[in-house]
Length: 443
Image (cartoon, rainbow, N blue to C red):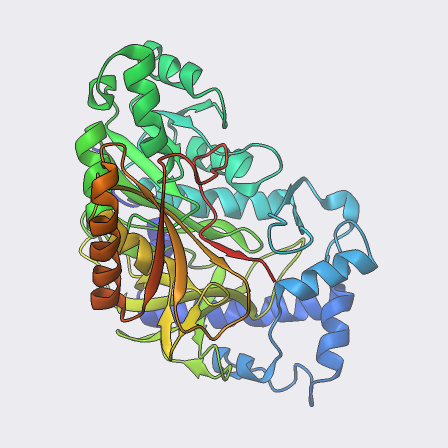
């Protein structure tokens, strides 16, 4: 019989045991960082008392946050790894690069020990989502330096599954490989299957569900929290669509997934990460209890190459459940509301692109659910200009009515005024993985 939990020792730790483990590893990690990271030594030299006052996890509130901008500046000072590198350069075993979409990219370095912990946490996540050695999984994320490509490939392999390293592009060849090799699991972004639907029908002349996929492992972008979007994938492809791959590339590739019994993201990074929430406006620490909403802040507990302390992820999350899950895992369950840097203020209302996406999903197939918010000045806003792709079957005389219904629903659900433009299907630019930028700031 399959084991139900990949690393039961860590994933099902009782609260008291976890607290003791976190304290022990945190104090050891802080000593290591102070001894080996010149960036943190300089930061902490300005803190009254330095590390002397850090005796418990709660005392971390006395240390400054770390931001992505600091990591960029560090690597500009000391390329390529930065002066937050805490191990000898010749101990680095693998290097990835984060996206440079909002600024200069950051190189992420890992030692062999870092990789072992990374792959274990990734395997926890994929196993929770149902991946097993019996699966043949085709991995369709970018292998060109991005963490989600090669490192997630290794995470998938760690479970014992057979992994087909396909990457992105050549979608017609992809559907042929799925058919010929008896692939039964797909690893990709959640938007990619929607793009593949047309390719399957055009290239093979069959419906996607006839390919035989049973499991979809998705991550890298939002969408699967919306039951309508998830249901559409599952009905079209005949596979279970699992939100299996949540991570923060600067910190840890994959440390959260839903489980087969409970479709809420489980924090699965016990022993590797300290998971905290703060008020994004004040920086004040918040309790991890049901209903708390805050910005996720992460601290490494056992990192050699580039340990981060009090790293602000910009991800706003809500704690949904605490205590043991029915699956036996004890990490808190949460949902990602959006990114603090994507939050838009419209006449006093906080609007997230994720919310707009959920509203549009209810209008498929009248719309494709692809959209962009193009801004020409900073917040606040009186209204939001949104370009939405209409569906291929919408007639010209139906456009105005569709726009009015969309605007009314956005007002009803999200309480803001949208100025809508309808665009032809496929006109909003996608990446090779089928992903569109939701917010464009032209200022």
